[in-house]
Amino acid sequence: MNETKAPEAPRKLGATAPRTRLSKLFDNRWAGLAGLLIALLAPFVNASDYALSIMTSAAIFAMLASGLNIVVGYTGLLDLGYAAFFAVGAYTSGVLATRFELPLLVTVPAVIVVTVIAGIIIGAPTLRLRSDYLAIVTLGFGEIIRITANNLPVTGGPSGIYGIPSLTDSPVTFYYVTVVIVAIAIIGASRLGRSRLGRAMRFVREDEDAAEATGVHTYRVKLAAYIAGAVWGGLAGVLFAGHLSAISPNSFTFLQSALVLMAVVLGGMGSVPGVVLGAIVISLLPELLRGVADYRYFIFGVLLIIVMLVRPQGLWPARSKEALK
Amino acid sequence: MTQLVWNGLFVGSFYALVALGYSMVYGIIKLLNFAHGDLYMLGAFSGFAVLSALGGVSAAMTLPVLLAVLLLTMVSTGLAGVVLERVAYRPLRGAPRLSLLITAVGASFAIEYGMRIVAGPDPQVYPVRLSGTAFEVFGASLTLPQLVLIGVAVVLMVGLHLLVAKTREGRAMRAIALDPRTSSLMGIDVNAVISRTFFIGSALAGAAGVMAGAYYGKIDFLMGFLIGLKAFTAAVIGGIGNIPGTMLGGLVLGLLESFGTYWLGGEWRDVFAFGVLILFLTVRPTGLLGERVTERV
Figure 1: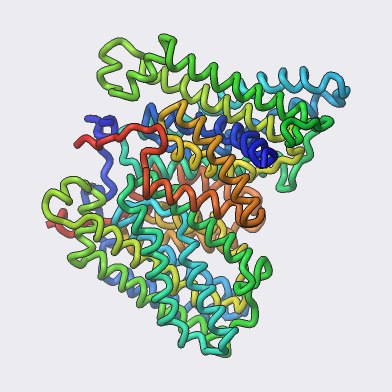
Figure 2 (figure 1 turned 135 degrees about the vertical axis):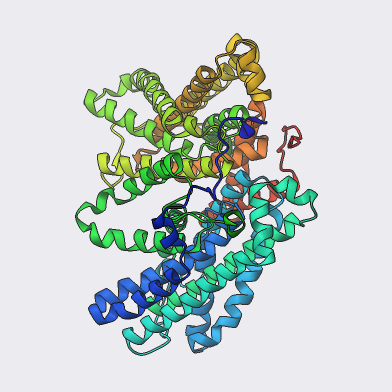
């Protein structure tokens, strides 16, 4: 079918609009540092348990978004079951920590191994398929993981696992530990995007056939992106388990996957500062809009359509450094 | 054994009906209408609204009334599908596939949670409940309503097949599936045909929604999510874009699920269905009756 290559206005995700003073400000390399500073200073403004809990969740959510950004933003593969990796990470560390009484940190290598395997199991058969099939298969896989966690005795069934040890004793230190880990993860995702592999990913997104023709092993690149996304999601799951100390299948529904996707799309696919901004907006907005909680997901859905129609590049679009020179 | 086959065929005909809309839209504009399952939910709710407005229905009149409501619902869900296409999908035709898919996810969310605002988060009990005395055929017990529902599903599917295979409209649809630009040069109003395709596909989903509501008795705003996934699975098994294949896929999935449930237990039913989906996509991505499609550059 070639109507996807219609002559009128091929939309590009990384738009090259004329640069205004505002966009120069957003391109500034200090933006990330400023964000980190805000995150580090926030407990001095409000350090109630409630505020800390929300901020910790927002940070974990930002890590999820930066992981999904590798898959959706850089490589252009729609993953609708990202919560599956989040669940795999959280459950792996939760089971190991409660059954064998290991500290949470010790479970991290096991989590990485398991999520890599999970990424290969889903990615290997499906990444050869067209992108829209991939979306549904990942959605199905997300459901498989959730239902499996719901049915198996080792994962505690519907009530899940509780009594997972935290990384630290006080919420404030846990918040700081989370912020540092998330910051490292975000920087890592950003560096990955600028690496040789990251450029290959973006090439695959823009034109898979051309990438293949110029010698990019597209399947391997897609699998690498997928595995990277899985590891990011899994590690965010460890933080999640440590933060809440209890996990249940209800935390890993399609809704969770869709919210992370929304953060990525809203912020700007492929743009690291964008998706972090998107994640913070998506996770903090419900706290500000308590009164209209019933309308929340409806608004998110409509917002998703509007963003795609009006501003497909997102709030804080990615700019390729090559295009600016 | 025959009971399992019968249950499978019954559930499978629902899947087939919903899967047809998926398959038609995909066949023509290569769009996975992610919100298709939610049109099924919309159908169930609009049937619910009409039946509630009617008040009580006497037991003898249940089937005729239900058939009238079915037609009404098909029209309203069909129109909803047309609006969805006009608002969310048409402006993005020609955009990268990723944008379209994300829009479809957004549309699905908007419909689901829009319905939650309208109807509330709790499941609603259908005012009409199809239940009849069971009778035995070859050792399987089945009921009259089951037979009627299967009959309606078969009539709708045969009608659709004739429409696509024999009529002028169907020829236009097939032409657009092959090449939209050339079809428009040949005097086909591409947008109108796509609108009508959405109408038909959504109407079929709406019909399935009403039937499911009347048969199972309970509806809620998330009921379309799982069936959308299952319908996609059915479409893939049969060969997406291929109408007889999709019907076959629905029945095959229904049978597989029925036997899978028997062997593995009900809690693994969905896992089994998605496992089959992944297996099919790995081994035979074109489905049972699908043709090999080569991507043109």
